[in-house]
Length: 192
Image (cartoon, rainbow, N blue to C red; front, side, top):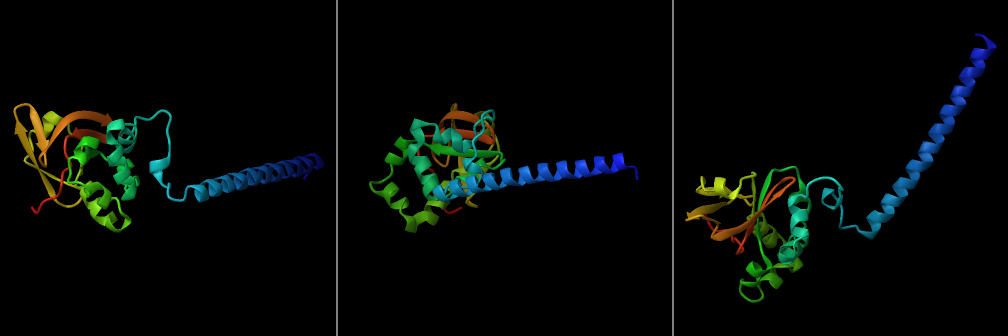
């Protein structure tokens, strides 16, 4: 091998080691920052907490940005269902307004938000979600919807209005991973 080729290989080797060393130091810093953030917000993990600048809001983000759905968001957080609402879907969420929650018997919401009732709360919230991405008019073709809690919700049409589980759809918002139908009451599971 010629001395000039040997010098070139040694120089290339040294450059590679230098770049690799810098890359590892940068990577170690990123892990430390991530660990610090993870420790500070240990509950807020998973794709529900990744923010995108360009993408269309998902069903959870739509609810979180709505002043009319603060009770629903609090319930979703208490049941630890944030990550379920950001999956690729498509998801159809029937989102009760704050007024819908207020119409429940006194103390119901407060009782459901207690840690010991987390599973019951999760079941009720899952009854508000189904697979699909159907607008209100298309829902008129259904008699029942299979909900995420493995029960069904009835679909009724009264004139131009559509009711799911007895709750009237009062607005619809398209999401990046499905659709949110705003409803006027909390849909409680019934025996099917």
